[in-house]
Structure formats: structure tokens, C-alpha cells
Amino acid sequence: MDLEARCEPVLETARTYAADVDAAARFPTEAVEALRASGLLGLTLPTEVCGLGAGPVEFSQVTARLAAACGSTAMIYLMHVSAAMTAAAAPPPSLPQVLTAMASGRTLATLAFSESGSRSHFWAPASRATLDGDGQVRLAAEKSFVTSAGQADLYVVCTLSADAGTGDGAVDLYAVAADTPGVAVAGAWRGMGLRGNASAPMRIEVSLSEGHRIGKPGAGFELMTGTVMPWFNLGNAAVSLGLATAACDAAISHASTARLQHLGQTLAELPTVRARIARMALRRAVTESYVRTASASIAAPDEQTALHVLGVKALANDAALEVTDEAMRICGGAAFSAHLQVERIFRDARAGHVMAPTADVLYDFYGKAVTGQPLF
Image 1 (cartoon, rainbow, N blue to C red):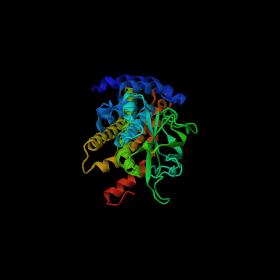
Image 2: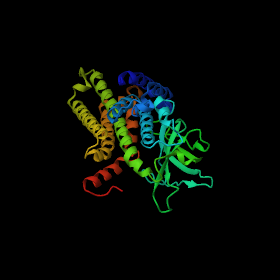
Image 3: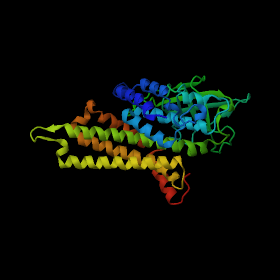
């Protein structure tokens, strides 16, 4: 598996269109088509379904590189992988070819979890499935933020289980094809950052066979915490790392070439600027090291894996905030113009911290874990 050969055309395309995607707040069609053709949509799926059979380490590396080129494309990618790995954990019987379709690039998938009633607590949806007289499952959910809304071919949707009692919090996950009657985008996406990821609200009012369920009845919570969170948190951390890397590179390049003519010096020759560069570069390096550690632990689980799953997103999200802020300070007024792209990266980096599970929620979970308290 030559990852470099698969990645480079995608990265080149993503870099080429990133500024326009951001300026026009449009879906990065060109980069997504390149992803479809590259085989990378099947990066982590098993070879038995025509995937590449790679794991968390390769996934975090590819996602970080994508984010350094285009944050929106990287977010679309990580959501696809998170949805794909959820379906792979318990394939829905009514969609026997879904994994092969995702691995081949024919099917772009995403998660449809968040609801206004549960907000960042994505594991506790407010919507509830019902059973009709014909044995069909009826989903009626208003989803508040769905990456690739209207662009994905398949949505992994969470809802309270139809089989549970009214007070029971059992959750089910369903694989819903985009062309199912009743799947609709319910609003526009106007984001401060990640402006091309089409993270719009959706209305999902569909009837499905129970064979579209991913996993056993009521198993959604375990899939969310045991499969979705490791892949999503790691991928989100990789996006933050990629954005931090791009900001670092841009700031160092600018400071090394921009000159103060009256002093005959570059910005990098000023001690105050050098100190900021050092802090920025070290913060990025520490984050890269931890993302690498977390990736390896998720790939080969050990006693620290649960902590890494909780900590990696929060740590990387905060690092991206700090690094991009430092890059803005280093570049000064030039950072506010579009030509450096630092302001785009700065805006994109703000999304991860408030994306469910938010960094604050993860810090709370981490604190519970290390003090021996139950997470939920």
C-alpha cells in the first residue's frame, strides 16, 4: 500500500481549491472526488471488502495531512471514516454491499448524531424511533449539524430505540441512504470556519426495515462510545494537528522572509518573534507526539487507551487554538490578508474545540476517569 502515491493527488487538489472553498463556503467537490478515486475512503476498512486494511496510525497521518491542505476536506474525510468503521463494526443486514461501496469510493458516508435537544451530548438523542404495523421502523429526527449534509451518500443516524420503554435511554444506529424518501437538508450552513464542510441541519423522516440497524437493538450507545468516539476523537485531533502544522509552516515562512527595511532584518531576527516561533513550534511538536501515542494505543489497545481516547481530541483542539493564535501574532497585520491563509486556518481551528464531544466535556470525562468516577 503506497500511501504517498494515493495521498499526493488528493493533497494537491485540496490545496488548489482550499481558498476558493473557504471564500465561497462551498463543498470541496474536487477534493472529495479525488478522495473517491484514491482509495482512501477505504483506508481503514478490511481488505475483504476491498479496503486498504490500515489502522488508526495511518488514519491520523492521512487526516492531518489533509487538514494542512484544507480543513473542510479533512473534516468530511474523518466523518466518513467514523461512519464507515461504525458500519464495519456491525454491518446492517439490509445493506450487504455497503462496506464495499464505501471502500471503493462509490459511497461517501457521514454521521448524523447531533440534535438541538441533546446538544453536545451526542450519545443521548432526543428523537425516538417507532415501529409501525408492517414491521417497519419509523425515524423522525431533526439533526442540527450534519457534515456533508446533502452531499453524502449514506448517513449513520442515531435515535432512541423503538424497543425500549419511554424512560429507557437505549439508543439505536441506522444506516440511511441519501436517496431514501424523507431525507432532506433543513437549512444552510454558514460557519465561521470549516466553511466548506456543509455541516447543515437535516430532517430525517423515513421508514426502514430493521435490517438497516447497525448492531443489535439498543446497542447504539456501546457503538458510539466503543467505536465512534475512538475514531472520531482521533480524527478530530488529527485535523487540529494538521491545522496547527499549516499555521506553523506559514508563520515561520513569513517571519523568515518578511523584512524590516530600516533595520535590515527579517522578522525572525527579532528576539520576541523568535520566542513566539519557539513556543508555537514546541506546542505543535508536543501535540504531534501525543497524537502519535494515542494512535498507536488505539491500534493496539492497552490500559491507557481509554484515557487517550478522551484526552487526544481535547489536547489537540486546545493546541490548535494556541498555535493558530500565535501564528496570527507572529505574522501581524499580514495575517489578516488572505494571501498567507493564516486567517483561514485560524478560523478553521476554532471548530474542533466546540464540536461534540466538546473539549470541555472531554476534560470532565478525563478527570472522572483518572479519579475513578463513572463517566456517564
